[in-house]
Image (cartoon, rainbow, N blue to C red; front, side):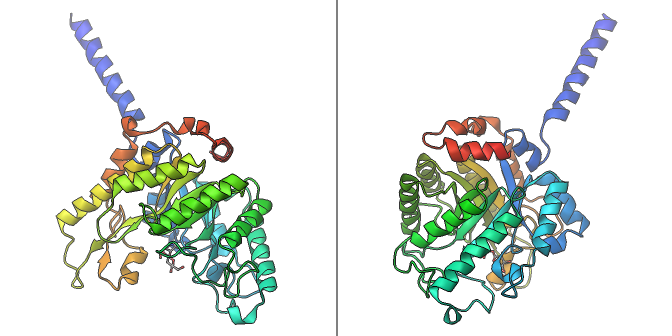
Length: 379
Ligand code: 9MR
């Protein structure tokens, strides 16, 4: 009898040890177990900070340079490409077996001072943009698996924004609607046919006029074979509110067109007082719920393939300076890298198999086999 009791206890111990080995303990492990991408924006200047790098490598399987691939960083001078920071991000990712998203090739904002509309003709701008896309994508071919080709081209009414690339003076396709976006996607596909090509947008994640304009553009591009693989939904939430039913409905209608969706810049800002009073526990709890709802919407949508936060520690987040210190603490880790309730909420969603769609099956989405198969080839 004694021997049997002992062996039952040994068995229990063994089962416990097995469970401990297989149960995920980080966001990355939870996401990896099902082929999901969990990413974050990074600032390569911080890689030398041990806690920054250790947290990054432990928790994420994908990174995206927050600024390092933007025109104002890469092309401070017209004829020079400074790939230093972008290359550092790729090296970090490859050393830690992570994927890299590229951001971004065409944007109306934050361009270098020399790129002034008054100094170029449409023909010159067209050559310049084609060459930029080509050089960027060829430099990173095989290292960057997906690019935000065009960022934030629509305004809140769903109209195309005035911009140097569209109509000021534009690349020769002014006032022809989304033709300039289409051109950028065609150049991008030529430059690196293996890369997944995304249109990335802010404040168009739920159902509104901007989201409708994007939906119509994707429908048109898919019908005419314009090479678009996905929509990046930024999901910067300023007020602790998300209409998650509308978010899920928007994701679902886009994926039904045969493109994938990725959440690309998730953060959830909390009101902060200028005298730096501790954050209110109710706000932290509400923030966690919002993270959970956004993650759940993605995880339940076949074809939503990534959840990426815009930075991961409150120590380095654009929200504070952008809101002049009135909002902040928007990320899953605090300024000292402690996990916040938002981390726990994300982790629980990612680790909960019952809530997921089957990613590995998403290649069978109607009309979606090509882009999603390409996605799987990259995994
Ligand atoms: O977080 C980024 C900040 O560090 C930069 O100063 C700014 C301008 O390049 O861009 C911020 O990132 C933006 C992203 O590129 C596009 N979507 C909105 C993001 C927050 O403003």
